[in-house]
Image (tube, rainbow, N blue to C red):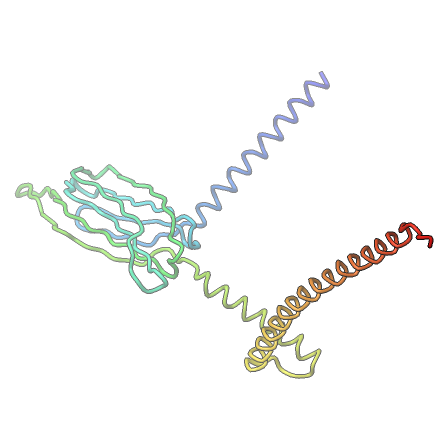
Length: 252
């Protein structure tokens, strides 16, 4: 019985932890979503929710919701989402399109879409809704349809972090720290002129080092040639002495 109680307790704890993790993930996801467009137009209400902030190469999730306020017959619906390449050039990133569907005063139609932000896109994004539809109204004197053709609504959307600017800020901070270290070591500021001078000195030392390596290689080759010549000479002298010692003596 004690073992069974322990197993049941462990299962309850694991279930609780799993549920808590799921709730935390859902809350984090909801907190990252923001309503960028919420408007009532004749016959319906349109709402666009999307990721509040993101980075280049990361994802944006978009939810487009249409709620009928009366009977509507949608002929064309399109949501285009644009980014700005290098923060200035407008570029299409994604679009949601649907044609020929109907809503009434009790129905809601929802679209969910996730796409990746291009690497060169940053700053604010832009959404644009294009809509053509008929709205039916019921009155005491009769029913009638109103046509709304090519309505367009524009609005700002998700902010994409400018990682290039952030990198520059980090480099600037590193430069400030380097300047501080340079000031502490040499009692002077690390100016742009100092950087240019140090860079020139570095390349001069690099050229000198390369030249020295070449000279060192030539010296090594010369040393090897001298050693070989010395060994050859010693061998020749030793051979000559040996031959002289081996020569038979002549008697007169």
